[in-house]
Image (cartoon, rainbow, N blue to C red; front, side):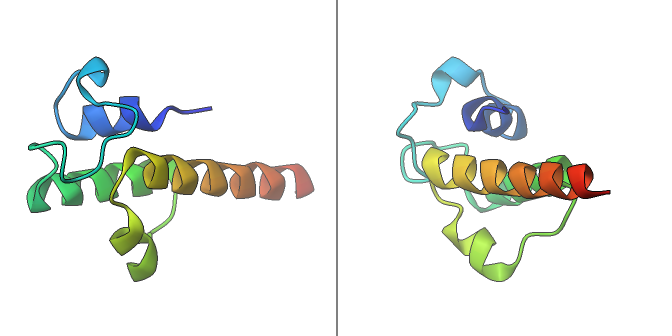
Length: 83
């Protein structure tokens, strides 16, 4: 399982330990509008699909990031098992 804090830190050019587990966009100065685009692009690369508008707008905390990451990777693994 991928850890959202590690992926966020990578997208924002930070150390994972500098991203609190309960962090939101308001808590991390690097997670500004440009940082958000980097986060979205890296997440799309990892999950292998584009995020829809609702997902992009909901992506505002470590927890929401982890939810999308887990959900997308679970669906991908189920699709892989079915082929």
